Length: 114
Length: 154
Image 1 (cartoon, chains in turn brown, blue):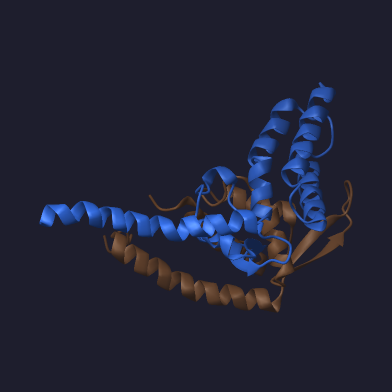
Image 2 (image 1 turned 45 degrees about the vertical axis):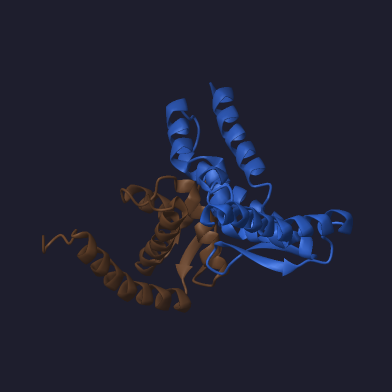
């Protein structure tokens, strides 16, 4: 079996870039972002783990945040993609396609060619 | 009913606080604030029903798992107990002031590096005999095997 931490690492990297991709479509509240990822099926098993990941993206300058007043309750944190985040996403898209194709070729799991 | 729900939320946040005890203070504060905000938004305005509160908490996941993600590590239960670098660190102990330092790498992983530490070393009374044993043991084993093999050949 593959070491669990290796798989966790792969998932983490993929999910981080899915966050960037969602933010590329438009800025969002953290909660909406987490729910969208949570609803995307197999991607996220526990929604709470997205928040540390968002903090990391913020620390790395790939996303930026500000607080906005909300009609109901306290202010909420709003997330936006930075230029660095946009170029990280572009890099990952190219990288991911190559990586996925290579893995599919070896595993024999390429959908259209099978 | 309200008290059951308050207790569920309170217990969850308390468990998160304690699971996150090992994080730097501001990372911990951020994490708890984020999860609190999530709960606020997911629950909306009262009255809450217990089922939806439990569902929201289930979807958030185990506090330990969330805190582990914040620390850039996988939960302890999934980590191998002894890694090669631990063994190397142990073997280096008698030689003086080495210890393994853990830090969080740029990609969020835990990086363990042997580093010179000013404040830790085995006392010589332990370190020197241990060093002798470490050096002598393989020699003794080789000699022992050689002495067993020698009569067979003759």
